[in-house]
Each structure stands twice: as structure tokens, then as C-alpha cells.
Image (cartoon, rainbow, N blue to C red; front, side):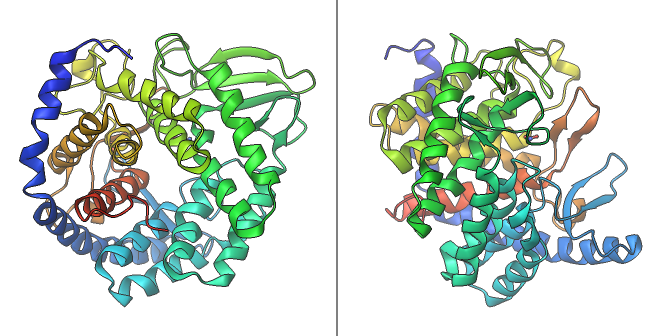
Length: 404
Ligand code: GLY
């Protein structure tokens, strides 16, 4: 594959050696900051819960523009990220304090394993119980993952060849968003854990349908594709959280990158590796990508000077690129260097220690068109930031990037 903008590639790759020498110290410092912030987050979460006096509000999600901590219920698509954050702290530190907190916060959302009304079960259950099972092999967690995979599979439509993202099962308009690529990892794991190959087949079919219909000639992706659920025909390709139907919503590109990297890990099908590489190159060689490699919320939004960044898109891409670097022979150094640069630059997005109600990263953007969560800390940015730090450490230690 021939790529343009070789100078950018060389510049990114040249920075690799600078980061190598500091790998462990940087990560140690980042986790020192993270553990201090997590103590703050736990205190702030307890205070916000007490104030709300609503037992259904269980997990922190974001700060609003006035700096108030927003706590959500188990059914919120972001409910699994704080448990996952705690599992990553336990993984890195080995401190039982974080194990206990991770178990507690995971338990708050176990009921979601039976929810067939959302496609977000991968985010909810795999970031929490998936990491929990990976680190503890608790058989009860295994059952939670398998049950969640069964619930998610109910949203699969063989005529469309995809899992329904939004809307109730049976609704004529069948919506699939690129974010849904993130829910497949749980299905692959469920097949491994249960021996039931139907989860694997659903994941592969969904990934293939998404390659066919979500991507443009320049390898960017649409956010939303609506299908006719009876015929499987594409009705329209549009956006919900991006600037325009034909624009590239930044987090969507990161979800695709991460999703296809995972699909390659699970299947070893080169089509997925190539798709991940194409997305990586759309991101890394994009003239609209700022020098610090943290994108604005949409690559094509005009008037960048007044637009917000999306730190979460940077963190997700960093984590994905570290894994992709272990599969992509030709671009391994480029991806590692880019990921390390993002990780280093995200330091500039952190609050002062003890501030930000315990969040690790400021400046994410949830949905700019809806004026929702614009330029605020959002929990998934922190989750993928911690994941990227752990992956960086594992690469430094010559271990598989994803601990099994
Ligand atoms: N739907 C997930 C996201 O906002 O990225």
C-alpha cells in the first residue's frame, strides 16, 4: 500500500525512540496520578449519589458544563466504564483495594446481562465483567458474559446481516452505527467460553456488513446506516453525532479502528487487518488532525478554532494502534509512535491532581450536534486512556498486548 504524507510518517516514527527510554517511568507516573484521581472520584461519586438519593443511579459518567458530576443508572451505555477503569487499576497495581472496588462497581450493573433493548452490552458488560473475568477467572463472571452475548444476539437480523443498534427489535427501520463494532469482542469471547459458535458467526457477519456499507472510498466511515429490516437494503447513510452526513465523526473513526483490530485478533482474517490499517491511515494522515494527534470532534467540521476536541477519540485510537502495531508488519513503528505520542500529549488534557472530580482527562465531546457533553470529561476517555497505558507497559515488557 502506498501512502501519502510520508513526511508526517517519518516525523511520528522519529519520535519513537524518545518515548522508548521513558516508557516505564511515564506509565508509573500516569498510574500514580490515576490512583489519586480515583480516590477523589470514589468520594465524589458517593457524595453525588447521596445527594441524588436514588438507588438506581450507580456509575459516574461525566461532568456537566458547570462541573457537576453526573451519575447514571445500569442501563446507561456508559455504565461499564467506571468498573472497567477500576479493573485496570487493579491490573496495573495488583492492589486488592481496587479489586474490591471493581467487584462492587461491576455488581451494580449485572442486571444488564438480560437487556435486549440495547446494542451497548459490549460496552456495559465487556468493559466491566469482561475485564473482571480476564483478571480473576471468576466463573460467575463467565456466566454474565455468556448471558449478555445471548441478549445481544437477539438484536441480530440475518437478512440485514447485522446487529440492530438503535430502536426496538421488530421496528421497520433497522439502524446500525459504526460504534457497534465495539460490541463484537464480547461475542468472540462468549464463543470461546461457551463453545457456541453462533456468537462468533454473528460477530463476523456484522463486521462484514459494516465493511460493505459503512465505509467511503477515502476509508472514513459513516456514523449511521439505516436498513430495511425486511429486505436488508440500505435506506440511507447519515449521521447523528457528526457534523454532516458526509463528514467523518472523530470517535466513529476510532471505534472502527478499534473494532477491526479486535476482529483481526479474533479471526486472523486479513480483510479485517487491512480495514484497520486503512482507517489508521485515514486518521494519521488526515490534514485536519492537529499536531498533538487529538482530533476535533469531527474531521470535517469548519471553523476549527471554535470547535472542541475529542480526547476520547484520541485515547481510543491510541489503545487500538498499540494492538494494531503488533499485527501490522509494515506500519508497526508508525502505529507505536503515533500511539505513544497521543498518550504523551493526553497529559496536557489532564486536570491538576485532585481536580476535575477525579476524572483523568478533560476535553471530550459526546454529541456536539445535540449540544450534549461538549468539551467535558467523559468516562470512556479515561477507560481507554488507562487501557492504552497498560498496553504500552505490556509492549515495553515484550508481553502480548492483551493479557489473556
Ligand atoms: N454511542 C457511543 C458514542 O457516543 O461514542
